[in-house]
Image 1 (tube, rainbow, N blue to C red):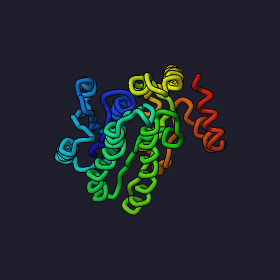
Image 2 (cartoon, rainbow, N blue to C red):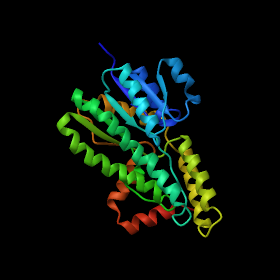
Image 3 (cartoon, helix red, strand yellow):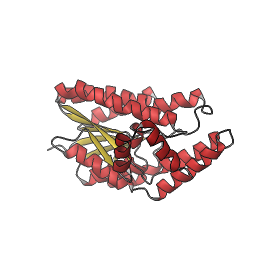
Image 4 (spheres, rainbow, N blue to C red):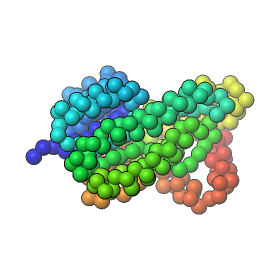
Length: 271
């Protein structure tokens, strides 16, 4: 019996790498992709198939998908994990950077789904796992562009889920809370670089400290990998999995509080 196959983006570190290893251990044939594969030698040594792929480059994506189709006849799951957080005050972030944030976090995800859907429709099955964030349900200062992309992923996934039900394809959203990955450090450094010397300096420095605290208290990437594995393996997966440090608490607070009350709560954490 042929192994079930999974394609994972952003698999060179953090959540993507943990997910690739876990699913490999569970017996899946894993295709792990990232822009730079230098940090993925350990995955290759495990027997995981490593492919260089840039989700902002059409040729890179189409060639990677063609390679996978040449090697396997089915694709059981697609894990859209590639992404990053572009932080900085709206006034300070260039529109070039804003557009790139959407290219990586939204349009790359959407294009990869387009490329994989003919295979999933033909087999009348499949799981599309979109890694969003609790940031797809809440906002925070200096994260407008990042949160906008994650809100977009949430709405995109809800619409896609209804479209694909007729073909037996499930769409699942993963909403991580604070996780110990490179993401947080990169976001903090970018925030300070972009707005640490502008009119927003005072709140930016407080925000950076808050992000550092959240990182220190964050969950390990394996927590998210386990949720992704559950979403892939479940007979009837949930539409959303909110997991990781603070995820449930923050989303519950957002649901119960008014907009201004939640604003006050968020700002009170930036000291």
